[in-house]
Image (cartoon, one colour):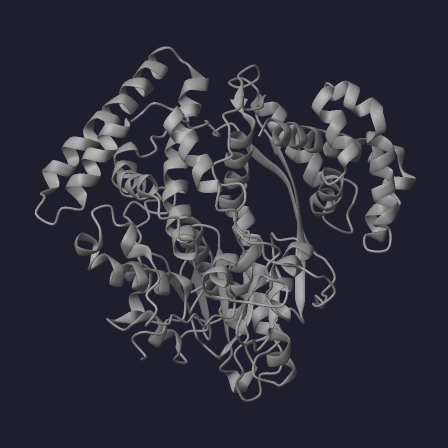
Length: 580
């Protein structure tokens, strides 16, 4: 029984597929019979953080007509009964302000994709030695002052970084700080997969092995459990499934959202004698977003609605219209695939024509500098992957009995690896950019209270709805100016962007604005009901965001800057929704 019951959706899904695929050839030439649920086998999912897919697949129909868990032991009950700790009790967010400058020689007139440009500039700041050194000082001194002496000196901490390169630089910086300050009682470990090449830090590739010389063949988790090490730095490792009750503090320098935020912070919730509180210092996330991530799991995880089975048919039609493959090629591939005597080269022969068409179109688009055609091909590639994932899920909760869908599923599975994404983005030269001003301030420590909102889980609804669009362009100078405006603003008590996202969400829900955006230019849209609805939402949020709302209403300059930010994002998103 223990081998049949799984603790996660992915394991259950793979187990189910594994059982079915053993009999694919016998149960039907196209495999559709294999997807029917056997009546003599039960599948169970045990998880503290179910996704909407998990509940749809394993839930039982409740009074509302929607799938729901057959039993719930909630986060709230577990905290109240002392089986886990409330990790949001001591949460301290930080606000970063910085200025960038460049010489203007290379990029004054050159256009860049705005989203990619901003991303690269932000990444440059995150990796900047001064930025990391300031955070390292905060982390080490906070740990020594508030954590190290707890649990009879055995307390530990985790530093969550945004990338493997950041983990490498954090490790080097934190070890140097510890040595420079003479804190010989502290030692660190770093966890990441593979090797990292970072010539600015060192000539040789970095790995867990050469960055943790004290391991001496031990498993990293076992070494961290000893008194030799107090701080573990991670990059996409040990954020889930890592059980170390001595963890009392977490320092976050990575964007977290949804179930990932819950799973990551929950590394702290294990109980231990003498452990009655935890500490979270967050350098990048908005407390409102963290609260939103936890809310669905605090009481009972519920579905807002169920998945629309027609999504897969709509996506099939969209992919067929691209004319990359033919029905005859799909049929021929499926015939070979479901024949147990077939060989791999026979499968490849039926995939090859579609691969050739895709590559030929891409080469032609590159030669003609046809950005729209390149976007369409990239969207086709993403939709292929979306189809495979969506059908893999929906076919386990809905009996389609559709031979064409099943054939496309296996065909797309084998096509996807042959049309992998190729890097079309030219790297931006950031050698002329300088960090001229920097300030990192701790906002007030707070307890994030859960149970105040009725947040529900939503199934996938927009799969395959993307369309190619012309990216917004900006010069490097303009990008730097915009970032400085956002981060440097006058709203020093809280994060302007977090507030902007809150107001933006309210504006996007307004039907009147949606209609006006669909039929007007941005300039005309700004002259309509936009300003009135914006200020109505500012006033409505006065109780929750008193500092920021008061400044927006009381300072014309702040109000104008804030209005411009909201206008840009709301208008563009409403237009995209309409075109989708």
